[in-house]
Length: 115
Image 1: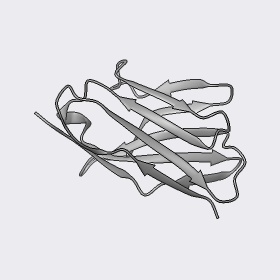
Image 2 (image 1 turned 45 degrees about the vertical axis):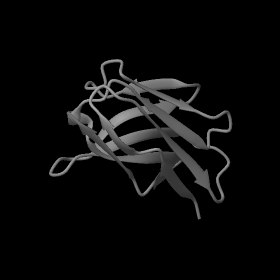
Image 3 (image 1 turned 45 degrees about the horizontal axis):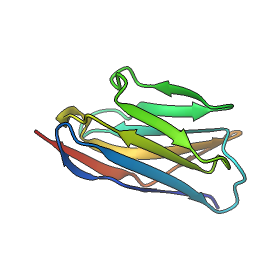
Image 4 (image 1 turned 90 degrees about the vertical axis):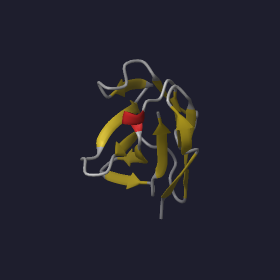
């Protein structure tokens, strides 16, 4: 059983920063891809950032250089540095890990940005 656990969410003012972390536990050696998604109330879940293969990264269009995704060498943990946050970034942020055809999700961590 593989589990993903997020941490690092919280409440900040507009322009502030947060660092999200996600670590895997259980029977996993490495994920082929890891990423962060977010879901605001009443909205669909959307990709924030992903890192795959040799370290290729992909970001949602709304990121505009404000966020940075990274992972550990074992490819079992992923991080998301959130800078210059705005109220529009308020959402539950979910960690995702893929290994072959298997897809794993964390429980989510709340990020709230006030103006």
